[in-house]
Length: 179
Ligand SMILES: Cc1cc2nc3c(=O)[nH]c(=O)nc-3n(C[C@H](O)[C@H](O)[C@H](O)COP(=O)(O)O)c2cc1C
Image 1 (cartoon, helix red, strand yellow):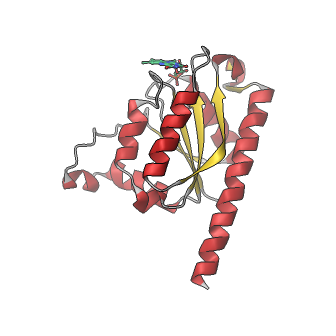
Image 2 (cartoon, helix red, strand yellow):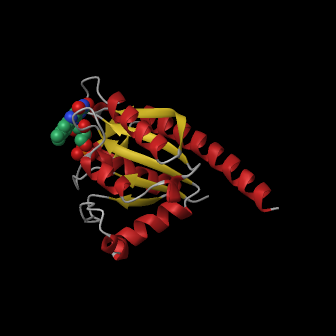
């Protein structure tokens, strides 16, 4: 199953990257890491569609069976880096696609607004944002292993399992439509 993680933290050594690397190691998911991809700022010009970074972003999301949006909460929303990347995408890539939402927060009871913001935008591109979602505060990380605490890793696992369930259902429906 092809699950793609869009890691929306612009900071190279941030906690968002730790979650992305943990999921890569544990599940073999492909990460689109916005801290290294050097995405241009969306300007609506057709010429941007020819840029290799945009083509690879669009192809990866289009071909994915499911997507995980991973973002730090910035001022009660997703990061600007993630929103900018999503502006290059739309229902062409996301229609009916199962999407899991995961926010990395500062530990002051934040995160939920980032999740709600991502959920609203996913509705805008006709994706299927799944019901389960997760906030990871700084105390959910085990920095010595570049990963998460056991309990947080279990929560991530439940999120991944639910995403895979919806991706399987989506794939079955696609097969039925083809037959
Ligand atoms: C500009 C800015 C705004 C932030 N706003 C919030 C916020 O609204 N709620 C929250 O819980 N944390 C907020 N934080 C804290 C970050 O979400 C937290 O530090 C997170 O770990 C950042 O991701 P990173 O470690 O991948 O860089 C903010 C941080 C920055 C830099």
